[in-house]
Amino acid sequence: MKLEKIRFFPSYRGSAKAYTYRALIGVGGNEGEVKKRFVALYRLLQDDPRLHVEESSPLFKNPPFGYAHQNDFYNAVMVVETSLHVNALLKILLHVEKRFRRVRLFKNGPRTLDLDIIFFNHERRHQKHVIVPHPKWQERLSVGVPLLALKRFKG
Image: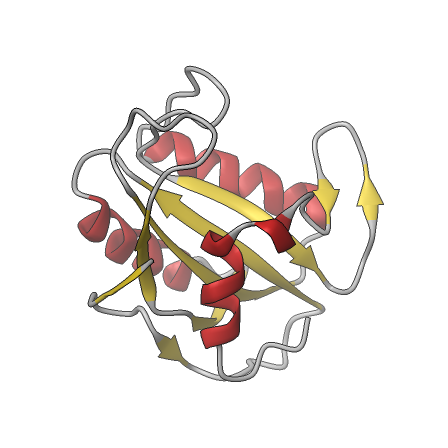
C-alpha cells in the first residue's frame, strides 16, 4: 500500500454539530483520472447541504482484490455527518456513483468510483440493500489503513 498526495485527502474540518448522524464512507476507484475524481467528489459532498464532510483520510494506492487483472485502486475514507437515515444516505451515494459514471460489470471489477457506507452512527443493520457495519471491512487494508490515519473518528 502506497501513500498518495492529493488535495483534500487528508482534511479535517471538525464537527458541524447540526447533524444527527455520523457515517464512515469508504471511497475507491481505479478507472480514469481517479485523483481528479476524488477532488471533485469531495467538493460535491462538501457543497451538499444535507451533508457535512468532517474529515477525510490520506489517499492510498493498493493492489486490487477479488479480480486481480485490473489497475491498482486508490482508496480513502471520509467521516460525513448528516440528518438523513442510512437508506437515504445510500441513495445519495448511489446517485453520486452514477454521476461519476460508475458501471457495475461484475463483482470486484474495475470502477470509476465506489462509495460504501462502512459505519453509520454505531448502528447494526442487515437489510436487502444496506448492511452496516460493512461486511468484511476489517479484512480490507483499503479500509483499515485509511481508518487508522483519521485524527478523530470514534465510530
